[in-house]
Amino acid sequence: MERNLMIAGFGGQGVMTMGRMLATATSETTDLNVTFFPSYGSAMRGGTANCFVVISDEEIGSPVSYNLEDLIVMNGPSYRAFIDNLKPGGNLFVNSTIVTDEITRDDINVVKAPVTQMAIDMSNERALNVIMLGVYIGYTNAVPEEVMIKGIETNFKKKPDLIEPNIEAFKKGLEIGKAAK
Amino acid sequence: MSERVFMKGCEAIAEAATRAGCRFFAGYPITPQNEIPEYFARRMPEVGGTFVQAESEVASVNMLYGAASTGIRAMSSSSSTGISLYSEGISYSASARLPIVYVNVQRGGPGIGAIQPSQQDYMQATKASGNGGFRMIVLAPSTVQECVDMVYESFDLAERDHNPVLILTDGVVGTMMEPVVLPPMKSDEEIQKLRDAFKYRAIIGHPLGEAAYCRPGSVGSGQEQVNIEADKLYKTWDKDVRVEEYLTEDAEIIIAAYGISARICRAVIKQLRAQGYKIGMIRPIRVSPFPYEAFSNIDFDRVKGILNVEMSIPAQMRWDVDYAVQGRCPIRECLRSGGQLLTNEQVMKAAQEMIKEVL
Image 1 (cartoon, chains in turn brown, red):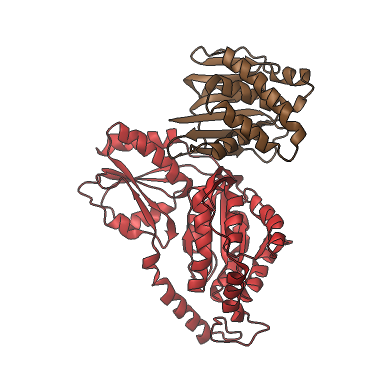
Image 2: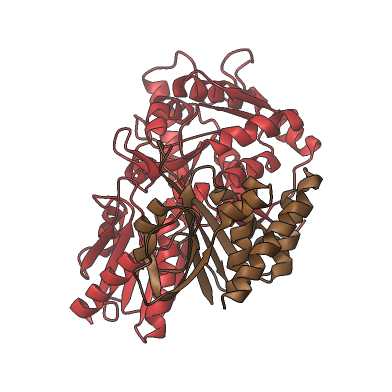
């Protein structure tokens, strides 16, 4: 089965890192095929940064999809730009601290998590992406949570003091994701 | 050695070249291939090689000419409009029969175009990368693993033929990350041996041995002799055709696609096969020499149509497909260009239209 995820937000929210961490962890600890594709323009300041992760047990075709199983939106413009690319029955993950839009589609699953505020409350403002990754994995189980925990350890191996706080942030997200099922 | 690593296409190209023994890289920045020079800038000092960020494309390509003349495995990369600036130097290296590897990570065009991916340099790559009618073997990877494998073998091809080689990829394959298995690193001894075998190619600073193709001052009949020898080489390339025929045995519709477009088409073909449609694909793995026979040998009693899929408007590879098919079945097109990405949905729609039309 193939699973297409798009992550979108402002530059600086860790959108690319989130996708790359998920894809790298999947590549390093599973036998699944995986692609990561970053998409950005030449002048994106204040605009949207986005990336695509495809995970599949078969050969992957396009690394980019406009017919998504999963969409993570970290800000309002991303929600408005990409909501129509989500399949009916697909999963929408919303950074509800920042996205104040009313979600009008009723043929999708919506998981809201105030990840920007949660990161501030944890005194770890940059971890909003890792919290959201937790929400995503908790809800979808796209890869087992242990895969991501190992991925966080690998990602921060050069800054070991960041491993624990990020695992903590990831687990906070996991709780929200699991509770939303 | 067989452990898989997760790498970006451009970085995988640079690492594969390093492992193949490339010890000289000169380049000038342009999106979407900047990760190639960036990687070389870090990697070359580690292995005793040389990385130069030149002042321009023209300077880069001429530095390569000099480096390759001394027997060093040399490579450069650029993107579309940057490759146009290389064309004079590429032509010179073809004339001197220097084994240089060039990489084009294609972006939208013509002109400065767009920084996003495209496949709009097909004609330039396969027919005329510079003046004078020279040719190159052109390899067209559709996955990051193929980038690795093709770059690794391209240096051997270049040295076998004493001729430059081009890797023709695009901004999707170049910037996406995928798991890859890397080839072994050539030892310093192997690299030195290769270098010694080619070091008499310089037209300045060495006596002109038998190995030297470029004969300074030999205009006129001397140049014609160079061209006759080159033509003899090109005529040996039938053996170098590489093509993948995917589910073509019983196909009634055949998709023609290469590179990134081919991997998108493969996914669509799987979906259509699941619905019972007999559809397959011919994918040139190398776009030069082109696999004309794969198309001309199609059983046109069974195959009712060909769908040519490229990220180029107007279509370019279609000319080669047309040349092989000679009007024996209808050919339709599914195209994007200018940096716009081809999607599964677009190919699916075009394939369904063709099914309606010919089946």
